Image (cartoon, rainbow, N blue to C red):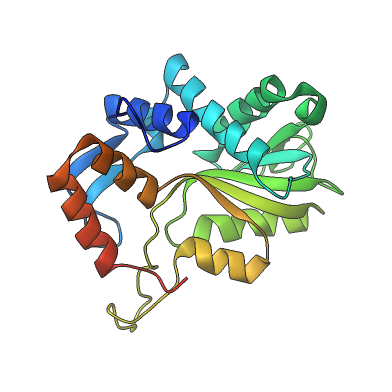
Length: 236
């Protein structure tokens, strides 16, 4: 997908190219869990080969390392299940970006069910008590998984300082039962930002994808994406 003169930073354009080549980012007609009919679909679970993981972890690490004001954190927390490999590979990649700054960063993730033998517990990896924690996940749709992760971190005595996801779809949250589907609403990321008062970063956004499509001259997919964005634009 990457154009010869991409309008995006290298880590974003390389990742977008990898995503389209692997079928992780696809264009067409897709019915989402919310019932919305989307002109594109993103599945980070398909980025499982060594080369693709390198692109993904590099993009995550660059996004965290270059965020201003600089983030200070001790642990990357990956919510089960998709967040688990992300937390591990991004932790390693951060050390290659800046070992002095990130060489002591650890990862942690939760089990879905509490271990009933050995040392017990629901966490694997670093303990969270007294640690500054960043949640790492793929996509935030309704924010439910993030709220569950926040509850775990708080229960374990950690301090949440930021959240980072692979993609921000930049669309309003699906309506809850009884709500008007056409009523204005925030995005999942906007709601989480407001609720917890912390930075919520995205490696890629809908705007990034559309900029790349425009640079490639892909007018058909760009128009469909633009129509979708207008229909589900959030208030934040």
